[in-house]
Length: 89
Image 1 (cartoon, rainbow, N blue to C red):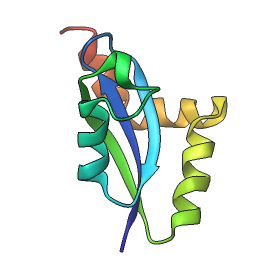
Image 2: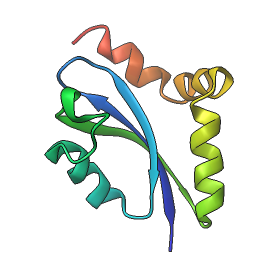
Image 3: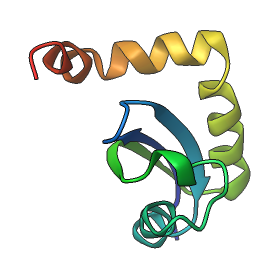
């Protein structure tokens, strides 16, 4: 079984959200149905990045790291081409 750390982007206002889950497909659907209070105002969401971990605690640790300023910089480097393409949409 895998656990996932994921990055969503709001289609509405281009905001980002980082989370972790054991069922990625279900969790993205929950965000888009408005079942998460913190992401409800910004739905719909699209999945733009994810990482898979074999251990739930590793996924949670990675989620917390990506939410730090250092982790955010790393993530922006990982999706650099995607972010660059947004400038021309």
